[in-house]
Length: 248
Ligand SMILES: [Zn+2]
Image (cartoon, rainbow, N blue to C red; front, side, top):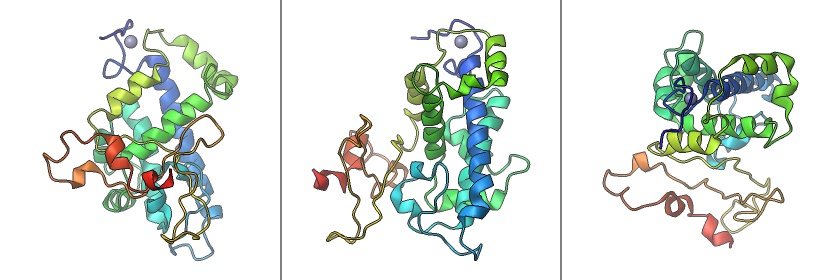
C-alpha cells in the first residue's frame, strides 16, 4: 500500500518534489487572487459582487459566488497561503488542517478566514484548485510551465525522488477520502437566468469540450451539515446531484 521510497513523504503520500510543486503553486494562486482583488472588485469596495472575475473563482461552487463579499474571497485566498504554510511545517495539507490553521497563520486576515468558513467556504475548494493547477502546469499532464521556470527546475532537481512523485490521484484520495466533501471543480455557470428555475446551470453533465464531464453542484450540501449516520451509504454521486440529473 505504502509505496513511498524516500521516507520523506508528508503523510506518506506527498513526496518532496510534489510538495515543492504543490507549495509553490498554492503560493502563486494566493498571489494571483489577492493581486487581482482590487481591479476585479466594483468601485464600491465593500459591496458584494456577483460572480467576480477572479482567478480560481471557478473552483467555488456557483451558489457561493452568486453574491460574494470581499472578505469571503480574502478568506478563500487565505486557504491557499495556509496550504503553503502547512507544507513548510511538514504537514500534509489536509482540509481540516487548512481550516483550523487559516485563522492562526501570521499575516493572514483572521476575520476573513472566519467569514469564508462561516459562509459555506471549504478548504477543499482551494486544494482542488491547487491540484488542478499543478496538473495544468505539469510537464506530462499539462503545458510544462512549472519547470519552464528555471528556479523551480533546479529546486526540484535537488530534492530526492520518490515513487510517489506526481501521483496526484493518491494525493487527492489521501486529502479527500475522509473530508467533508470531495470537490470537483471547476464549477461553470452560464450567465443567463433563463430557465424555469430562474437559473440556468447550463452544460450540466455535458462534456465541456475538454474531455471532462462537468457537474453543477451548486445545490450540494456538505455532508457535515447532515446528521451523523445519514452519511452512511450515501456516495458523493448521490449528494452531488440535485440539479445535475435534471439536465440529462
Ligand atoms: Zn516518499
